[in-house]
Amino acid sequence: MAKLISENVTGGNYLTQHEPSPPLYCWLRKKDGSWQFCADYRGLNIITICDRFPIPTVGELLDELHEATVFSKLDLRAGYHQIPVAPEDIYKTAFRTVDGYFEFLVMPFGLTNAPSAFQAIINNMFHPIFRRFVLVFFDNILVYNPSSPSHLQRLTTILQVLQSNSLYAKLPKCCFSVPSVDYLGHVIFEVGVSID
Image (cartoon, rainbow, N blue to C red; front, side, top):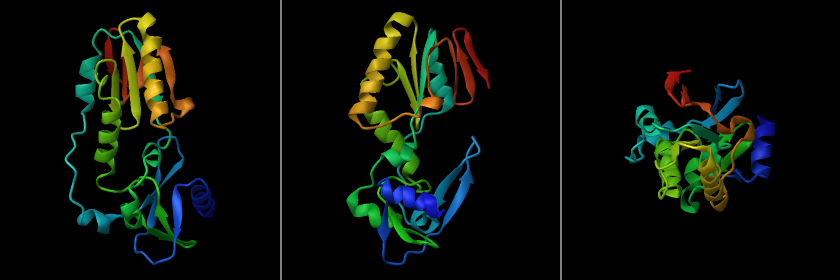
């Protein structure tokens, strides 16, 4: 825990806080076996006005893929942690550990509006091309095309959008210009979709 806190303070994700604050933290196991830090924001979430930004369903997204034969998948590295918290809201993200009190400078996991806020930010970035050749489900980005020649150009467009917004993908979880791809628990290929 101390190492994680130190890395995040040094990396600019946390700020040391000196006033006591009640939220504790917990660990959530990820699919790959690693651990995800999550502060307990139940008290804050109870008084938060819920954002109603629509989250797409997997079915809605998969319906867009007819005629696609070439796919690239990008997975944003620590998705929420690439979105800064508004300066006036930083104090609300405070949490405590045995090593002291800290505040998030980036969007933490566990806030009730984090998923919808993140999806809204990502949708806005890709708005001009969303569902034309790119699908976004939180930090999972799928570029799709009916043919290979235009795919590289469209993939370049997506990478430029990410770069201009200082967002980074996790390379080991990405794949490029493939005829089939695992996406949101489904295997997608030219002739259809199957459950992974």
